[in-house]
Length: 615
Ligand code: ADP
Ligand code: ZN
Ligand code: MG
Image (cartoon, rainbow, N blue to C red; front, top):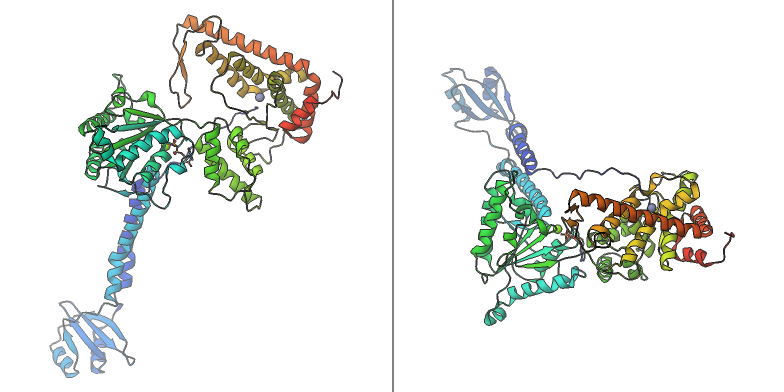
């Protein structure tokens, strides 16, 4: 595959909770200070004392209220409408008799509030409504963060997971049969404890789900909640870690207190590695995290095996977890949730396809084969992208083509509509991609590809080769590993043979080929020099992290030399194969250049037909 450099986009950070509080407070204050006084107070017009006397004498004044420095009075007009006035207080001894004379009601008369109920609603109802709305919004964001739509318990600690409309069950989790089996036992124990108690069997206290990201660990935990009809507390490890020292430990305590009250129940701690990291004596220890972890360890010891509280946790970095957490009596069972195999991928495609309108003739087997190494989350994404593409194309059903195109999109990025390859570049890319494919085909004598396209992608890939493996293998022989290296070298080799010049397009190939060569030497014991000697350890098996060399720097040098030698001979082999098949290389590349796409069948047809050019 040809790649260019691309920048990464930063993920959008969610708005902090304080932000919502701020808005609510502001809204309440504004309402009370600015809007309410206008709405609630009857309009009072200030007038002169003589106007007041005139009105009294004309008999229009209905009520009068006097206090020490002003007189409030209301006037009824001919329609019976009341309007309010005020005037300054004048020491007028005749006033009382004047008022009596005209039969005016006076004394402590307060202008009537326009609508008592409305004012109550305004001053209390609306602020309450705002606070309720903000609270709902907040609990929703929090809920999303935890992957539940639950309601808060005790304010700060765990959330009870209430299966809502989108209740998940084991049927929503495709593949992963081993993991389901292990968890089914837990579910069974919680619903029929007597079966186990009579034999004396104790249920595992803690079950740790481990696996690469996106393989369905969180989903699996939700499914357990759906299957077992017991309360389900869910909290993410990161929520324990707070700014204030001691809060994390308090949260753990809270959580377990709640859980014990609700037993039998399940507590789910997602991404437990945030708190469960190995404690070490290094300088950069994190007191808060250690306290939280200690509290967790204590709590897990604190309750009996038959108390009915079972702790599920998920992580993709089990190797960083503190050994104390993994000992029997705590998380004594580890359930691997691995990347799906071919059958698993097909099943995941089918599960997700159910949620969309699909054409009848979808070839799920092919989709499964084309997505080797994809996680469940990626497959879910592919199916959704396909549905979006179907809408874009104005279809009412998702068809096979949508799915295949969206596999390319998810793996290689969107087609760049306005990035145009110059004819020269297009030619180079054609030869490069055919170089890979031809080398692969000559080594195995089977169709090595499903499709090659040379449409530039937003990810920076200029061409894309969609490979499908007929059947998946768990073991790779030394020859196969070497052949794979030769295939990666095929692109660059083709460029060099045809153009006598090399490009930057092979950067990704170079990375891959080096990775394989290094692994062959340092981890798979496939070199003459070192044999079975392990020279590297892999620091995080599920995240595909770095390996660290565990040998002297002198040996390191030798390793580099061996790796170099391996790559050199792979490149030589690739050049050899292409030189032998130069005619076919031209023919195939020409086809790809003209059509921009070549399928596996077309590829094999051209490869197997009589030579067009005589070599
Ligand atoms: P993890 O917690 O392991 O990183 P998630 O459980 O969050 O992964 O999975 C993300 C999404 O991927 C799920 O919501 C689901 O749509 C999809 N998914 C992953 N694995 C599976 C699976 N085995 N079956 C069906 N869908 C899956
Ligand atoms: Zn390449
Ligand atoms: Mg998860």
